[in-house]
Image 1 (cartoon, rainbow, N blue to C red):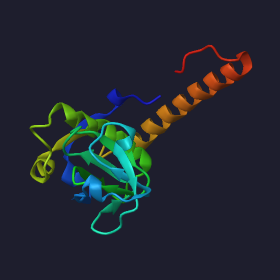
Image 2: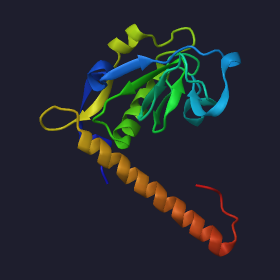
Image 3: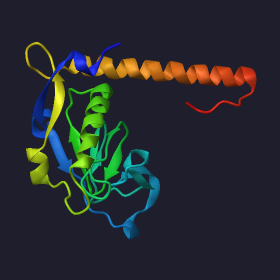
Image 4: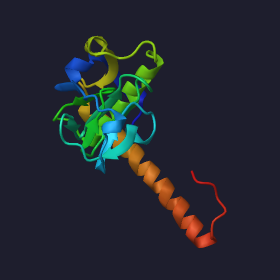
Length: 180
């Protein structure tokens, strides 16, 4: 199994990693229209989904990207595989080259920004442009996308095996075990 210590790491500016960095737009809660599109705000829970709306005017819709909370639960970062409307408290980070596995790996790193920022020291556009995160590099000194993808895939397989074993055991014995 791949280990994080198997690679050399290097700092990268967020602006080097993402081709699009854009903040959502303000949409007051009283203007939310009930719908099926996730509304992502600055929550650390449920991928940041705060509501489901149908608004299409004066909103920004993103998908297949990272969301980064600028305020509230500052630094909370999630991979968002679905189309969503971003509040003005969210910055979307996107690079067309990245797979879901790259985003999941990077999200685990960007989540650590919550230790650096807080309600009184929010993440603004200027701070994002200066922010660096450490990521693994290959022998050429470039971002090691292959390692990042394989690392997450291995952990995904391991978790799925654990859950399958748990479910199988509980179906056969009738339960009584704690969820892993």
